Image 1 (spheres, rainbow, N blue to C red):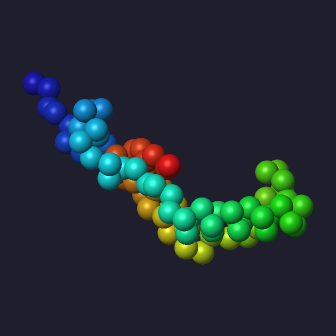
Image 2: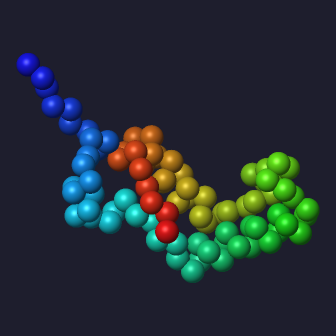
Length: 82
């Protein structure tokens, strides 16, 4: 007998289409924080090869990044960032 797997990570496209809970829409504050971090890193002469977490501070948006990480590891396994 085959047992159906029951978990958040078991989904089909039509099921996801019924909800947009898996989509994060960037707010104006999100964009402003990301832009400020980018400008700061560029002002320091950072490149993708020399950039560190400390060079790209995201005090507020980092919480959303952690939620995305948790959703990828323990939830649906996907998250769309728009």
